[in-house]
Length: 306
Image 1 (cartoon, rainbow, N blue to C red):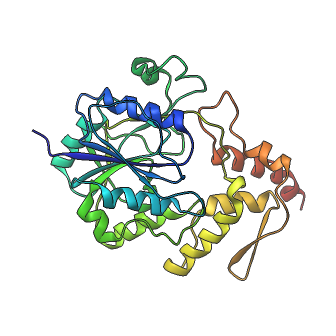
Image 2: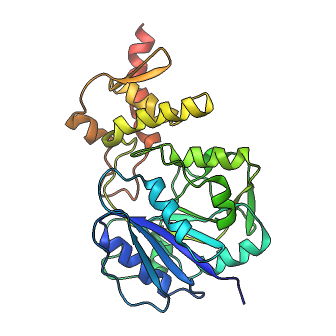
Image 3: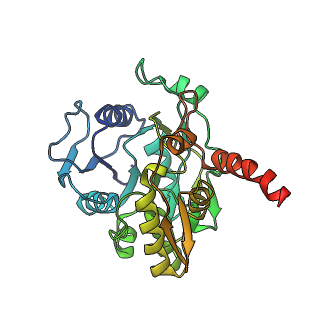
């Protein structure tokens, strides 16, 4: 029998997404032993009945960080083996079984597959055959290895959307740094802390999650101020900034400028900025690379003339 597994998630709003996550877990070939939720709102979620316990820990609304909610879920989990899923993920029926198998093979941080679903994919309920057919891999993320596990040597690839690791290892790292407030930077920081501690990273074939469609912006211009603040926080901690590609895009958009090693907002965000970075209804995900290419192509003629 496989060792018990706790699945951890966090959420504020997006009740329909969380319901689909729960229903996906309930259809798993191997069930988790519990689902632990760090609830970043004042009321618990109303969720369907499940063959495993769901433990909701209310942290309340306000200026709570994503890091704090993930940390709370991990601390409250009853088991050594943890699987972290974001609220907008639907676990494939094999996800828990795959992670159980891979955690028998390797220690460290295991990162499962993610496929992005188009708009309307869940309107008829959970159809995993259709999800596998229509879900697409993010063009800016590495694909799964040919073997069940593949080594990852770059901590910057760590992504909290879908990963697994041992609770003792997570707690020994101190969890996610709760000084990263708002959007951006906490994943790269956690990856850096893990790398500095000698924790290994592994791409995982399988352990798939399906990302549910929701409107988004990339680069995240709607979180520009927290991206700048967290880039500075990362710099102060590690000696260099992170989220370079986002900051570059913001610079090309005329939103941000660098002065003396720090980044500063130049102007207010406008509708044109939101339109440029918005995920379109026919796109399963928003792409920073697409926006950067558009901005650099627009700049190229002026650069050539100069």
